[in-house]
Length: 156
Image (tube, rainbow, N blue to C red):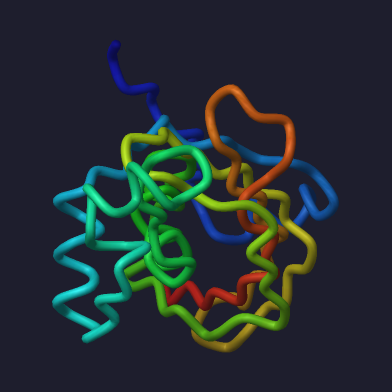
């Protein structure tokens, strides 16, 4: 399976006329047990539901470990990069989140992707602030795993 090309916008201002539109969906991304383990080590969150494969096989719904919600959320940047490209900007700054809901689990081995809808565009002296409505979905499921409102600043 080959990666899709991201949807490209030559200038940040080109986004302004697309407020309210879904502008892209990322490639599918597999959440591996190795990634879950590395995240557990990085954050010191080593609950068995994330790290103990054998125990999860017996005790966890679905028989697999569960990715940390914050791990799934932390994948927004690479998911965005596979969905959208904004030219003539020198930096992208994660400005925060207004609302996040973890609506369903992501299990080890699941594939996820994100869908990005531009909610707001605010011109700034140095570029623009963008507010994205993000749905992260899991392959084969209709219910999203994360729903978020993500604030991003793009600097020219």
